[in-house]
Image (spheres, rainbow, N blue to C red):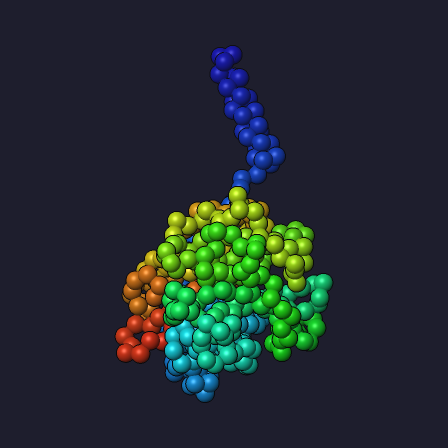
Length: 362
């Protein structure tokens, strides 16, 4: 009888102890500890395709590739490359806006490549890859890559991109409202030279997307070697101010061990829980790649996620038909909006359209 009387008190003490323990050490929820992303919804067709009125009016014959989408209050602002004649050759940077990320309106041309692609034209191609606001300058900054063509006389591949230089342009109108431009070129902030690293290869510097960690700016930048052909590695550069000067991280840090072979054009977002999410062009059938970091420096191995449902897929199958994610915007409800480019299926002439999907943490 004595033991049976003590049993309920012991159980009560146990539950009290567990309650105090849970209060002192709360469970980490899925939002604070994201593991994998899942596809919640995907628009059944492209949101900007070849029949869009502004595409027709601007005479964009081949579509879109690379860029970044920024959300300010209730408006999405997209800076994206238009391949207006030949895919990946005739380029201009354009500016679009939308209230719902579905219905888009073209507002301006920001930059154009210089006609006459050649080894002696350092702006044969221009690719926008990063958009950030500088509180110190009270101005928006866009970062874009300018390439020259290969020189066959020197053993280079004429159709490939060489000696990428990262240009910084700043909004002429100060404050947040200056995002729509116009933009003034401020100079080259990263380029090939004496500080280049062996892994960067002949294409670098390719792609540049800054993000801030406490008081320091970091940026993913890409490289690639054509002869002999190598992978497509990504490294980090750092600066105390967005306008620079920018310095490469040491060679014992670069390149980042995120992928084995290929990643390009990463866009980095700081989530509301403080973690960092990078989305990027990757291998995979209608997939994008992503990586997560606690501190903005140590990044997880690549994961991939499909951004179209099989029964509503409008992009071609295979590696590189699904191209580049332009954003990973964390919405008020915790979902993530992704805008991306992809090669349309069932078309005689290639057109890289803009698509939209919504992701969430499992």
